[in-house]
Amino acid sequence: MAEDAMPWGQNSGIRTNAPLTMTSSRHPSHPTGPSIISNPLRSLRRLLSAAVCITVAACAAAPGLMAQAPSASAKPRLVVFLVVDGLPQRQVTAYRDQLAPDGLARFLDRGAWFANAHYGHSFTVTGAGHATMLTGAYPHRTGIIGNDWRDPQTGEPEYCAGDASATYIGHKTGRLDGTSPKNLKVETVGDVLRGIDARSKVIAISGKDRGAILPGGKTGTAYMYMEDGEFASTTFYMKEHPAWVNAYNGRRLADSYFKKMWTPVLPAAAYAGDLPDDQPWYGPAGGKLPMMMGGANDDAPKAGYYRSLLKGPFADVMSLEFARAAIAGEALGQDDIPDILAVSLSGHDYVNHAYSAESRMSHDHLLQLDRMLQDFFQDLDRTVGKDNYIAMLTADHGFTPAPEYSASRGLDAGRFDSAAALVRVNAALEKTFEQPRLVRGYSGSGLLLDRKRVADARLDMAVVTEAARAALLTEPAIGAAYTRAEFMSGSRAGAPFFGQMEKSWHKDVSGEVQFVFKPNWIAGSAPATHGSPYEADTQVPILMYGPRWIKPGRFDARVEVVDIAPTLAAMLGVPAPSASEGRVLPSGR
Image (tube, rainbow, N blue to C red; front, side):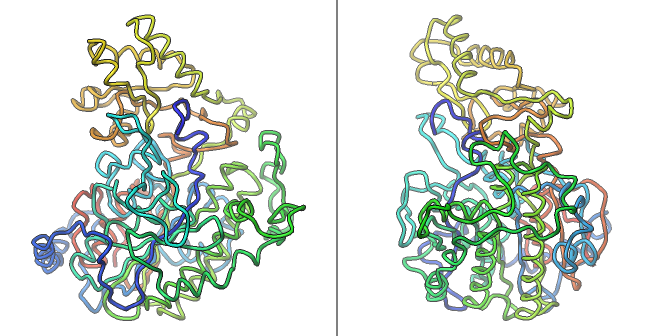
């Protein structure tokens, strides 16, 4: 990441890579993926598991808690955890009358859904969101403060799922590609489940490496979409792919979409309320439906074509087809030992970055996803059994409208020029302290000072930090900024956005000054993005279905994404992950 790049701007989550996987035996060992659970802790977990029914039942009187933990025979055989990357809750409700009967409507009409579900942290980006969902913890505990950041001591770029010791199986691996959960500092529901019984399987799949690796945790297996249209895992998880993965890749499904048209689901009148296609701020490539996959002059699929499949419905079709292959190949949900299948569908995020959530492209993409999910649920009913699994769906973040769209509605909106702002901040510090480049660059959602340069100049770090904060606050895009000392002491508790920003800041990973933009301001050149503490980015769907375990209905009280992990743990009859800071959702039978 260049020094003048904002992690949520040009680097705005648009990164391709691969999902997690397991060996083909029903109850594989996990020799290459080191467990975070020691043997004594496993013993403790078994005791805790035996006691969890008592614990949950004792809490039954508290509002919002499930009445009892399930018996072994009543546990779901499979938890299907679905993520629609970049899906704001407002889109789910806005298009409700256009949904298929058994896709998202299965949750809304026959399941439980939470109309006021939010993230509680401020820097709402893909890595941070995916790390939160199944750990029940925000970045101040997970250590995943963004998609990428800088090492606080050296200033070197770090990637949330990066690990130089692991490589993709059968594919080239770049320096900052995502290959393992090394940077995730806490456990997931799947880690707890496998720590109690290693025969449980946890498989995570995504169009993005971080979308698979972070929900998969330390002991699951991740598979990711690669730039040749295949799915692959890494050497962190296994030495070679099982046969079912090779069989899937041998089908070359991605090639079948070459020159295929992305055609709208509904007639043009159904999209009358959307932004028209080909807005000037879409960039030179524009964007309109119908859209052909692959360039008009291309005579065969190439790397650019495979990447382009992510910006539309077809990579999500492939992710769900790979999930079907995983269910069959790994025999998921076929006995009373619970398994977890996590599938993060990446296409909506790419579409929204390119065209905005207010576009016809985004509207239709959600309808495409809805029809895919209908087919997938019906396949689950047939292969796993409709009373044997729980399905849950959420998103890693919402989406801020494009500044051009906001400005057209008379709102104060704009784009933050991160490179120019960094020059101005450093110039202000040099004028005061007579030292150049005291700010090394952006890191996560903050400024990282050059600690060595500050020390060599015998400057007081606290004084320099305060000066950097003051200089940053002169920028018209900045809404609030707080310092390391304030987060360490909690001295600004109650100040605007401090609580949310505190949850996005980690003492061992973050820099010296954390900041947020004003409403409707974004960084970078992408038409639209996310990463703010405002409702457009924090409010996401939490949808649940599983008639044996989940009481249907709409729930209007505010809940948070950290509530997902303890809820699933309770349904599985295991303790919540140790770092979890959520509570069980009010949806139990």
